[in-house]
Amino acid sequence: IDQSVAFVGGIDLAYGRWDDDEHRLTDVGSVKRITAAQSMDTLNTSFTPGSREALNVKQLSECNGNSTGRISTEDMMDAKLKGIGKSRKFSRFSLYKQLYKHNIQHADSVSSIDSNSYRGSVRSLQTGVGELLGETRFWHGKDYCNFVFKDWVQLDKPFDDFIDRYKTPRMPWHDIACVVHGKVARDVSRHFIQRWNFTKIMKSKYRSLSYPFLLPKSHRTAKELKYQVPGSVSAKVQVLRSAADWSAGIKHHEESIHNAYVHVIENSKHFIYIENQFFISCADNKVVFNKIGDTIAQRILRAHRENQRYRVYVVTPLLPGFEGDISTGGGTALQAIMHFNYRTMCRGENSIIGQVKAEIGDQWMNYVSFCGLRTYAELEGKLVTELIYVHSKLLIADDNTVIIGSANINDRSMMGKRDSEMAVIVQDTETVPSVMNGEEYAAGKFAQALRLQCFRVVLGCTNDLTVDIQDPISDKFFKEVWVATAARNTTIFDKVFRCLPSDEVYNLLHLREFITKPGLATEDPTKAAEELQRIRGFLVQLPFYFLSEENLLPSVGTKESMVPMETWT
Image (cartoon, rainbow, N blue to C red; front, top):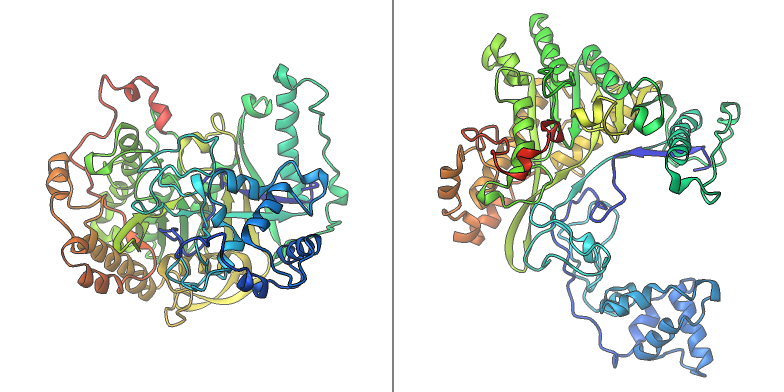
């Protein structure tokens, strides 16, 4: 924004991306729509004097000579469809007209206020977003999605549902981005300007005067901030990117995001916390080339040799984000990504656990934890569960260094020559008193606050101050809080829902047997609901042995086997 404020992250401008810390599964509304014949008494008394709707009602009543200040719903809707009270500049487009056209006019704020029901469509209120009344919804049409269950269709019809929200839970979205100001915002802008101008030169359809060349502003004026996002803190920030000749017109490709990840992990002293959509690393220099996984393994081994306490936390999706019925194996594309994720984490001698286990055996469990996120809800009287899709691209190290951006942990994002990516590395300059390994520690103000927020969300202790998450590497936290919470949640979810993916399923034969046995949610819903009360947060263990006896790479003859292997890395 004006080369002075920049937002950096991996959140797509797409359907289904908005979410909050609640990670709700359901969004069906709670009452029937009001009828046109109903009085507007409740509506009129509910409006604040300064609201736009109140102003419209007042204007309309004056136009109709209605001294009581009340009009019928039909009159009000007609007025809105005709654009009364709006300037001609904006009369062409009307949200009410669009809602009416798609037969969901009952889903606006006006109809919700006229409801006597105060039962919201969510089970709790922790985020400050507020409850929704009536059939008002958080996610309209295509925004209500579960892309592993079904990929998007008819994208030109945004208000039309494409999955049945009364039968299928949505898949919550877990993501992160940051905002930067001043000189670093100038650098973010310069990267955009470089790409814009390069594209204008190279692609003929952009050479017209309709697409102007852009000019970067000077760094000398970068400190002249007219606006600053509330809650910002001062820190050292460096812009990172993956860029190459095809994307930015540079002679030598840049992989500074990859270099930063490796450098931060190598030089971390106490812990690293990673949230990422993919986890494809551990170089064999044939198919996979980025060094992040190998760096993690070597850092763990160095900590063991030096008798240091060191922790690695990794949170990644339980399943890749590809459409596929996991009860039948998930589909070729989904399995291919699973192969490379598992190859990085735990399968084979080149995996992180494989490299560490070869030297220190089962003591690897004292150093690293791989987890996913899952939640549950009640949908139309039936208990349902779904994984939470982790889309973040985040690294926090030692409560003083943070990397946030758009780059996944895979070759596509990291190696520079392939996808174009951006990130920022933040090193705190302001410190706050904290604890690390039971000793006093000067933690970075931004890094620690972000780490604590992430931990509170996934561990479910946003409002529970009795859970001590201050010291991220103590045995008490790592074993009795983090690992114990993930293990307990996993056990309960497996008992109640018999979730997939599961460690009980080694091959497709096991899978067919597994899905025939009902969970507690089917056999005894009341007891299942009692069990679910013991769930804390969203954290669950990643199932290391799911389909471990199957070859998950694309089979010969499938269309997926015909594309280059690097498609999946």
